[in-house]
Length: 340
View 1: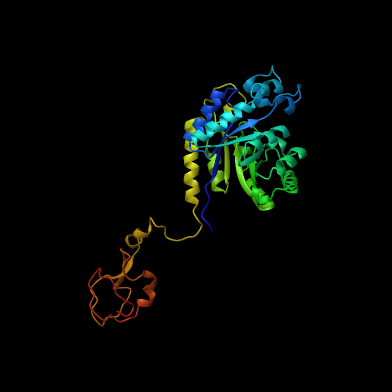
View 2: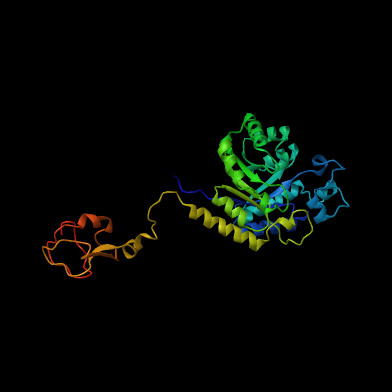
């Protein structure tokens, strides 16, 4: 088994910039400081994303009020083309990768111009055939979020992507729950393993729970990509701030994930480099429990087992019994050989 590859960690800035470019840059700074691999925004045009009468989700109503439509809320959260270019430059300056989720075909085309490493399919688009087909035609690596989806819907989305020209090995399927925040009872991390087994794909996890323990657990189960919302302040007004991590929390999550990834190792059970020096100290050897004269037979009454482990292994104890000592041994002296 090969050693685990580095887990890809994505700081989901999303719309937590509240439409303010300077806030977006501060989110990039926070992601960079936390040593995330990527920071991800959202690219959309409210006019092509929702109808004027589309309502908000319940969690959005609680956090942003119910007196505006989803369209009105999203319109204030758009980032224009110039803002994207500026954010890309800021990511380059801070040494963190730039990503964004496109929510329509035109936005996919725009992000293609930016030559991003991944295209992210949000959970709401997993049943959008024209959208999936357009993503597949880009030939880029794809992160496919699966909130609200059944296994068959995931399979169908994969088929569309592959029929459009992308190989399965370029797709990482992210287990996800589309509730903000996600109740622990609804996380169902084992579903990530089911996706991996049944669909033979790389898997990851997009998290909307409170806290950092679930993304860490996902990595322990084999997630190769982890995505988590980042905010500058959970008290800010907006649809996603409440279920996001603040910068210090995000940094703690990254550190924990890096430790878990390293700790998973290569799966081969053997003494590690750090513990090898302790073998002689912790293990034992066959020694004389009292004086054993030359010509005396080794028995349970004159042999015992004690530390250190620099002599004959106690695994040979039974083979020593009944043998004749060829010299005198004193108490605590190690027996030299099976013929001794």
